[in-house]
Image (cartoon, rainbow, N blue to C red; front, top):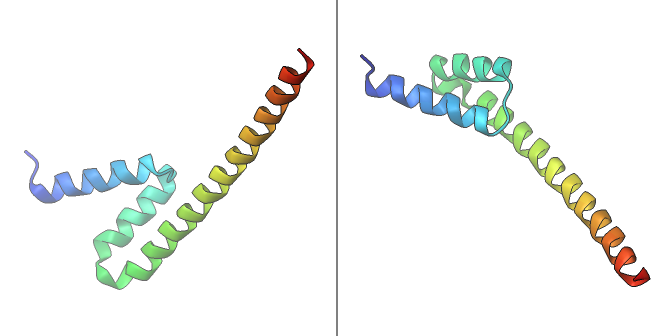
Length: 79
């Protein structure tokens, strides 16, 4: 039997997993969450760090796509 708070915690865990948090980071975040609003700044810092990492990954992938497109363009011009 699960109550609404259990469902909310599970939803948070799934969201943290989906955005790329490791098991250890999820555990840390959830421990902080259970401690209450006094840990809000630390949790925000964790989210900001993950957001920054995600943006770096996006930029890296965009550069990869540009290089692939260049190679495809060069191949098309030789035909």
